[in-house]
Image 1: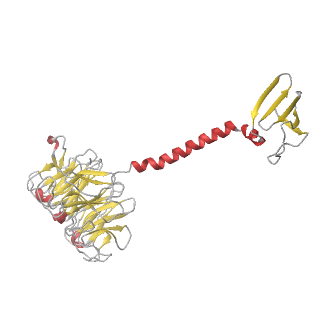
Image 2 (image 1 turned 90 degrees about the vertical axis):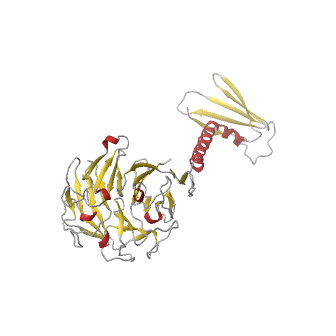
Image 3 (image 1 turned 135 degrees about the horizontal axis):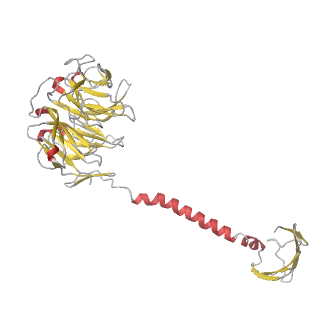
Length: 425
C-alpha cells in the first residue's frame, strides 16, 4: 500500500538543537487508491520517539533514537544493509582466499641436484636410474616411447629396430631390419639406424643413416619402403650425407631430417620424391643463417618452428619455418663448449614436453639437461656432469632422450649399451 505524506510542521533536523521533551510534530498520512484512513501522531523526545497509528486496530511502538531522526530512517533498510554487508564480506573473503592460498601451494623452486632427487618447479625426478633395457654391443642410438609405454629402440650396431614391451618380455621383437643384426642396403635390411619415429598405427619410420635414406616399415612388415633419400649419398635435394636425427609432424605426416654433413634441415612432405630445404644450407658455421653439424631436431607445430641441436656449435637454437636464420635458446653463439648450466658440449638428441620445456642429451658432458620454457639456464636431471660411469646415477655418452605420458625420462645411454629410466616422483 502506498502512502503520501502531508507535513503540518517542519521535521526536526540535525540542526534543530533546541527541541524540548514536549515538542510535538503531527503528520497525516493518506493511502493512495484506498478507502482506509490512517492518522499518525508522532512525539519527539530527546531519548525516544513514540509513534501511534490509529485505525481499526491500535499499534504502538517505541524507537530509541538518541535525538537523531535520521537514525529512524536508517532502521528501515537495516535488513538490506546487513544482507549486502554480509554478501560483500563473503565476496572479499573468497577473492582473498584465491590469491593467498596458492601462495602456500607453489611447488618447490629448488634447482639443485642431490644424491636422491632433482627438484624444479612442479618437477621432481629420482636421480638414480633404472635399467629397463640392456643389450650388449647394441649402441642404442635413439628411442621412442609410445602411449602404451612400449619402447622402440634403434640399435645402431645391431642394424635393427627393436620393440620392447617392458611388462612382457615375450613381446620383445624386431620390427625393422634383421633379427641377427646383419646389415645391408636392400629393402629388408638396415645399416646403422640412427633415429626413428612411430605413428599411431605402429608403423615405424627409420632413419637408415649409412644407407642415407628413411625407410617406412608398416606394422608387421618384413621389409621397408623408401620415403626419403632416393638419390643415395650426396647433397642434392633427393640425397643425404650421414643424416643423424629426424622428426615427424603427426598432423601432416611431413618428415624433417637433420642432414648432418650437409649442415641443413630437409623437409619431405608425405609422398614427395624430393626434399625441400627449410633451414641451413649455407655451409658449416656459427652465423645465424648457418648450422654447425645439426643433430637432434624437434618440430613444434604450435609455433611452426624447429628446435635444433648444433653438435659442433655446442648450442640449441630455434628456427621458425620460413625464416632465414635461427635464434639462440641456450649454449654458445660462437661454437665454444662448456659444462656450466648455460653451456653444452656436443649435444645430440632432444625432446620437448607439452608446455615447451626442452630436454637435451648433452652427450659429451654425460648428462641430461632440462631447460624450462623460455629459459637458457639448464638443470641437470640425469647423470653427473663430466663423469662417464656405469653406476645407476651416471651416464656415458647419452645420445637421445624421450618421455612417456607421465613425464618419466628414458635415456639412450649409448656408451653403456642400455636404456635408463628416471622416474618422476
